[in-house]
Image (tube, rainbow, N blue to C red; front, side, top):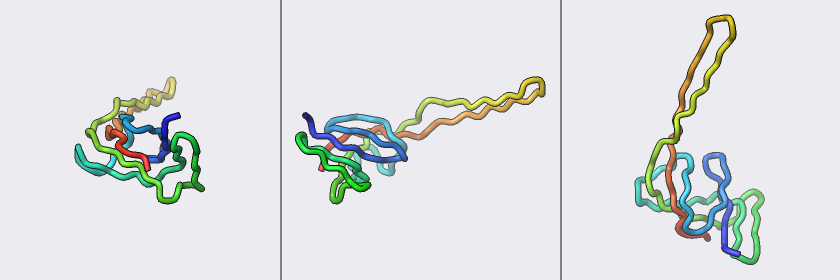
Length: 104
């Protein structure tokens, strides 16, 4: 089994392995920078799993910022029938594409 880690960032949890590329909520840093994520909830070395309460002490995951981008436009639409009331609100989330460099 391949080593993996469960990290938390932006209020969401992700299971990552070395070399993964994923979109998460925006992180500070420019393209090419290395960022260390210290909120590691569980980490496996391939044979044994170490879980934290809630975080694993001393564990961190190093990721490289690939680019900053915007997510798809989401539309919230409200309507009350027979009242002539409609409301439309759009939202686009700022995202960061990261690549996992090292688990540790």
